[in-house]
Amino acid sequence: MADYPEINVPVTEAEAKQLEERDLWWTGPRLVALLLVTMSIVLTVLYLAASASFDPSMGQ
Image 1 (cartoon, rainbow, N blue to C red):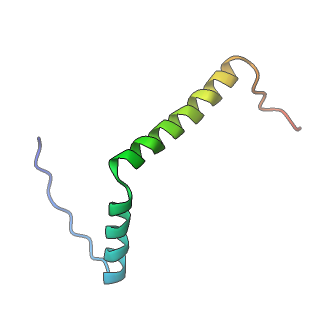
Image 2 (image 1 turned 60 degrees about the horizontal axis):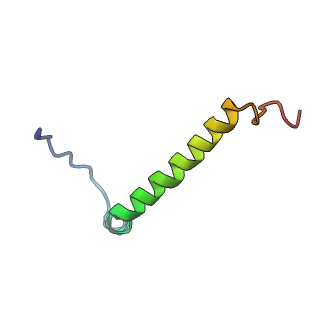
């Protein structure tokens, strides 16, 4: 793997605590679940658009 330079961004203590909490919350299974939900929405919209069931001019 390539070694990337570490980027140091100044943050306050409150921001650092918030970032740490977010990092702990976004675990692997949650990211996979988010991916599956997003992909199912995208594929549904694409399917509906391809089958002409989705009409962008609806409601006009």
